[in-house]
Image 1 (cartoon, helix red, strand yellow):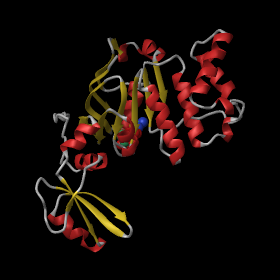
Image 2 (cartoon, rainbow, N blue to C red; image 1 turned 180 degrees about the vertical axis):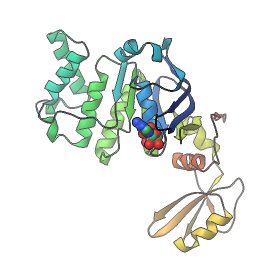
Image 3 (cartoon, protein in one colour; image 1 turned 135 degrees about the horizontal axis):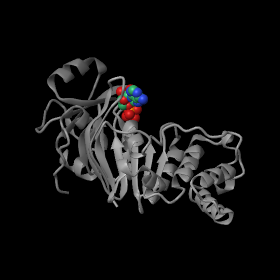
Length: 301
Ligand code: ADP
């Protein structure tokens, strides 16, 4: 089972071109769609979840033409939107049971089994009788995943799921997602580089509605070896450094500014070569030093 997105564009009625000729091949496993706010991620997620139509393009899940078989696709699709409302006074068990009815589980006994196994899977069994209004952010997201998993979807779409989670909740949530990736296509949209580096075997970087890079994290990182150089400076030197070098990122560390620059050769002047990570891939791509258009990474591991 593979998800194939071909030449998808979306222009909203107000003229905003949120997606421009997006093509992606998304195999089984965890796939990360990484990009800043406003890049077009949610728009693409909603289109894939059959909740809105693109202006052009096609989508296939396996052999199924998604845009022309929405009802069929919805049966095998799970979607965790960026924001979702819950009924604060309902208990986790009752609300999941209710959603299971909506999903077509009409037999009470089998529904109870499904609800129980899902609550256990997302580690909310002990909290099943608690009201959702008292849930933490992480518990809410895990409940959302339980809802999205009703019907055993072949395609699971999760939109910015870790925003707002504390570190422990985030790790727990990502572990849950990675288990799910073993059997289905899990598409994760995020602006957090670590979500992708920790979890995804395949990824794309999107900005301003365009795919800038489609790659595997390890391949992309390897292709940057020997090209990322670091210098610690006082902030006042930043304009000079930016004029003379291809700065891809700046970060504060212990009151100093840590600059990463892209260079095929040793820039000298106190720069140290660093082992690149996915953040360097992301910033090199966003600053135009890596990828471009829909070009694929063709660097062997
Ligand atoms: P992301 O999820 O990456 O933050 P979005 O898909 O939400 O990006 O937004 C992409 C662009 O489309 C943004 O410029 C946003 O303002 C615009 N946009 C999103 N939804 C709508 C809408 N319903 N109507 C008009 N413009 C929209």
